[in-house]
Image (tube, rainbow, N blue to C red; front, side, top):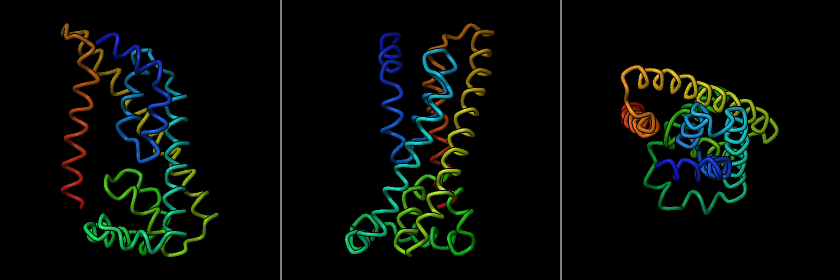
Amino acid sequence: MEDIINSISSYGYIIIFFYSLGGGFFALVGGAILASIGKLDILLVILTAGISNMVGDMFLFYLGKYHKRDITHHHFFIKHRRKFAYSKILIKRSDIFAIFLQKYIYGVKTIVPILLGLINYNFSKFALLNLFASLIWAISIGFGSFYFSNGVREFFNEYHIHPLLLPILFLFFLFLFWKWIDKKIL
C-alpha cells in the first residue's frame, strides 16, 4: 500500500489535472488527503484542480457554442433530458448562481457549461465567472477535505487504527454521500 501511495504522490498532480478536466471532485479530495499525510502540497493540489476544472468547463462551453447539432442529437443528451431541463431552470433563475452551483452537483457540472454555450451566453462573462467558481470550488473542497482528513487521522491515531485506511474510508463515504445527493436533487 505504501508503494501505491508513493507512486500516486509522484504522479499526483498530473492525475489531479486530467481527472479535474471533467469535474474532478474525487481527485481533489484524494489529493487533499494525500496532502494531509505529507505526500503532496495542498496549495498545488488546489491550484491544479481549480485551473484544470476551469479549462474543462471552457472546453465544454466551446463544444456547446460551436457544435450545437452534434450535441443536441447525441444519445447521451437525449437520455438526460431531465438534467437538461433542471439546468435550464437553474440558468433562467440566476446564471451566476448556476455557474457556481454546478461545480458541486454531480451530473449537472458537465451540462451547465454546454447549455450556456448552446444559448449563446457571453463568453467573457462565463470565463470570468467560471474562473472564480473553479477557484472557490477547489478551495472549499480542497481545504475542507484537508482539514477533515487531519481530524479523522487524529481520531485514527487515538484509537490505534491504521492510517492508510483513512483515504479509502473517506472516499467511500464521500462516494455514498454524493450518490445520495444525486438521487435527491436530480
